[in-house]
Length: 216
Ligand SMILES: [Zn+2]
Image 1 (cartoon, rainbow, N blue to C red):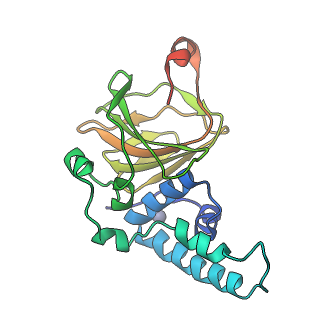
Image 2 (cartoon, rainbow, N blue to C red):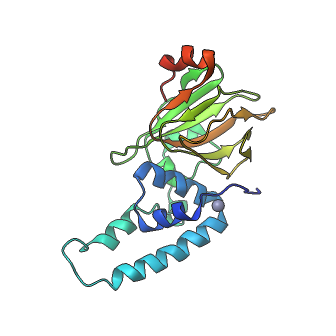
């Protein structure tokens, strides 16, 4: 697997510091599970961050800061020892990291023609909604932008848009400044893990007609 699109350094730093919203944290961890390069970077940042925290003078606020950071870090290596739950084993989502499989995952729901999603329930409340999105081969999504940050991790299949071509392991970031129309490659379904804040904003006449019906 050749990974061409990575989260930028500021996101990896925020991940290592444990300051990301939990849903975004899960999206970055999903990328790390597939990407040795970013795993090395995040691990180096964790060590630096840990050393900084350890050298801080004791303060009531910082009492268990390091512990809390560590508790939020998905156990990428140790997760490999865990058995996935039977429901998820049955789901057979290629590329879905094991730490995500321990969270409750809903049934596939229809979103739009040839597009379905499964919601992932995180262990604590998050401003970010996390779901699996499956789009059929050749699906052309409606031109859209975002009112918040959307992180997309490709698990299987591929899509392209103005920002490039995205295959398994690739990470894509959308926000209010990005206006794009992804198109899924021919040949196989594309399944992504998506961490989304805010809403999609559909463009064009068809988009405005569809907008009330699209709830991700
Ligand atoms: Zn990477």
